[in-house]
Length: 323
Image (cartoon, rainbow, N blue to C red; front, top):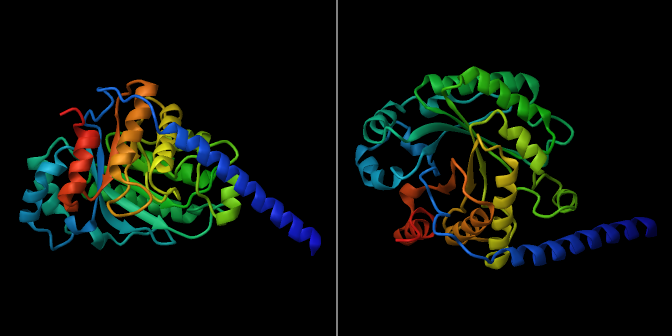
């Protein structure tokens, strides 16, 4: 018993050391110059709620949201949850024609992707996050979303553990099924902020919180767009969250191939532990240090429903910071 207690205390001490060291390093990252050019070039994305594609879609709501939706290169519209067997209830987007038709007419340059999601507890360390038979069915579901008129699919599947080969296989199968003209977008997990942080956090939280840059690179290869999230980071606000986002952006810029689009997520309004203005400042600092990159932007949540002050923070922080 005494031996076990010593091991537990040693493990907790290791987590504490990593946390303190990481916090000091990350907070120091949130400083530096922001170049005028380090801002949006129009390659930005937005997550929208599923109400846009249900039978209650209202054209008046669309008209009101039009000025905000038009600034994005792609929007992710929630079309269904992924069941354990890989199936998706297609009724979730059966009435999408009205919305898709308006988008084609009013905002033809904005790509509309069907957003498929799945959230589970724990990790996929011992088995594939999406097992073989479920993967085959999910690939069919992704193809059905494109056949319904969407410009592509956006996967948001969590958690996926580093080196889970089934998830990469899912993306490769989806790439083949939807064709080269359709857009394949995938939401990643946050990246390990400092070397040695991933495993202690994995053990403490009993689940995957971070990806390695190597695994992000594997996931990015079959994709057209990768989104690194800026919420659920476990970081409090202020300089620690800002430094974390600087580090996330810098790591993603190095890991994701240049021919794949990269979006860095901003947290939803009121989510706690960070805000869109801080995320935007952090992204600009990292981009200034890295240098310009094609097809790079940010991703925001529900711009159609944002309060005016929250939307102003996105505009002033990223979309048009030099106005």
